[in-house]
Length: 325
Image (cartoon, rainbow, N blue to C red; front, side):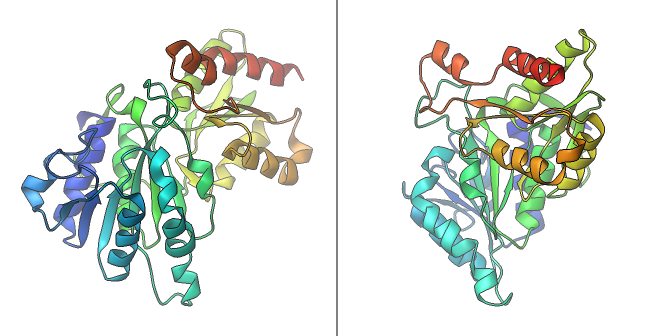
């Protein structure tokens, strides 16, 4: 075991997968000479050369379009969108091409590509560098994952690179250097579409991921002082979700609170709430509550950013209301 940061776990996974499989290539803005704007790809160019670590123009549609073509040609591209906010120019390539080609060709073609998407607030990035856009990609044919820990950051990235389907890998910028964890030095994989129970409890289930997982865990500790034992689920895979783990937990606690930092309207929390209402209604003792970012563009001022994002206090209050219902 060695203690690593979240960003180091990503870098380690890239090094190991490129060593293991010569078909893995890296492409994106500043991923080579500069080592990535967050240094996630540091050292890869020197080790694997410019034919496998490719600096691209500032053109997201081209980055993803080239990745789709490379994947169809037998490579396993790992594309970096420098900030997830700027993935929208590549929407057609992802949603209409990468997600559809396997199905359009009756399973004859696969698109084994990974798209790394640094996302999230708490870093003072403002309107264009802090958004959480994971809900844009609840599209059949795409897989969306978001690790919350260094262990999962490494294991899920390895699983994504080896997957035969296109995977969007959302990595939270605030977590890059703010958390450390012991990670096995031997080979391991974190399976896609498998959530984990981050904390056991019996009174209410908190469902979250990324930075909000840590705020949910903090809230659970505060609630325990009041006699409310919250179970906390780390989703890991956002689409398609691990319904079995979610349903098992909520079926036992009979209450659920979903926490994410994207705007509430159109967020994945709405899908989880609808899923529970449709399929687990008779086991619920209270309506499913969503605690999310505001339905506004992301603010820049630190005071407004703190107001915008779900806080530990907001989660605690939301859980109290749910448990009192």
